[in-house]
Image 1 (spheres, one colour):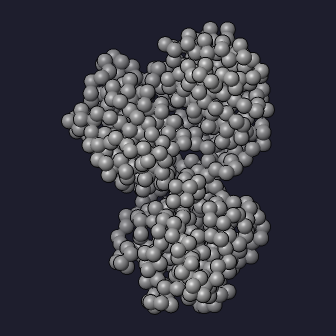
Image 2: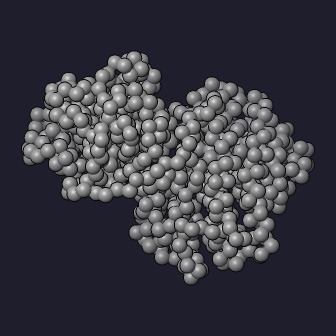
Image 3: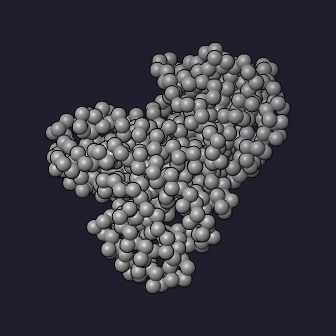
Length: 622
């Protein structure tokens, strides 16, 4: 499969209102997914002919397209589809932007995903006289629909069913037909697509924020389900054209949750939402003096039968798994292996019926993680997923699942999704310890009380944000930054380094502090910033030895520690203190200054914080 490809965004509307402003507004809510070009297609209402569907598209930000369309006034029509594209096959250009037309102009499509066999299909179509104007894999779909219509006849639904049966890879499609002035067709396979049911029309979208302004009633499409939308009707079919009954899901997010709410950036808003998000995630699951995980259906015998836990995740979710390893092993005394999902299938994993696979993904659609989960399941592991998106592919295919209640996260760099995932790892660790009896009763009670207090402690740390902002002002011109720590502090260093590099573009690295003398310390130069995490009391003195080592090579040290560990000031140049809490939960406090530090540095450098270059929110193809 194509590597390094990202989520595009799809929006569609059919109803009684002007389509173009709705499409542009919906696409603006999907900018967080990453894109380099945008376009819309609107049916003018004319029954047939190439110009019955008008297309406008351009490379660059959505503002470029919006100016061309005079904010939506330039294209008349009450039905259309829109798209934001991240280049995979074919570089960014106006021509490669979506939507794409078939040869006669009868079919116009937008596509999210990767067509793996596009070259084979393209070669065959060229042999039948079809000419291609773009370098994309997506244009193949439009021509293929026309080809199968001419070859087999039948209606539009027949044609679409035949077309998708020939496509290999992942796709979500929105389709207009010049001879269907009142219908949008859509289908998904592996790439997410939802249907919105509104009073003034109906919608398709890649994600809920795109249409939340217009409706809260949603259908989540399953793989290979085809939907036909008109202004007042939605019909869903399987590939055999048999009707499919769907359950409507009501979205209860506040509309403001998908807006900035007065903050300059989504990332900062989402940092500040973490106390609420963690409270929502943990509070319902602490009951009757213990941890109650209602969506996890383990028997006592099954819990005792777990001999190994493997955590599968990518990016920041992988860093959550790294913290989780230390916490679960200490609390539940079960060995934990954390594996990058993109590597899992290729390392000959030793997984069986006595293995619990914990799968972590914010979107629930991450391609590598989904593939790794399926492989673990094939090998006999029981799957427990930790996801934020209800009805996502990973959630549906898991044996057990725990939702995080972070709400929509718009900024590409994760903050509240990371923190809620981490809080779920605490719940899992304590749940297992509770049933296995691996923690003394007084320790378990203290941990439970610490978990209850976590949202309030997080608020305390966030109240100290001005100190972090001041420190960022001292170091925003750094060229290289190193994060060091031991045990969970090392796992937190990984996330701190990633946050800094992904939004500020400053080179940063994270190292286990005990490994400095094994080569890394040669990179320390006069004035190099080293962020030293020291929240583990048992390892504090060893960390201070590491701080002395980097100071002796000229480093400037920013220490992150706990109130009461005041002797850090004898070694570090600057210090940030965290309030005391049960030791298991210091990672949730330590990540907050790291998030804020990265945010303020990126802001001072003038970076595009919510949409950093070359990145997107979710990776839905390998």
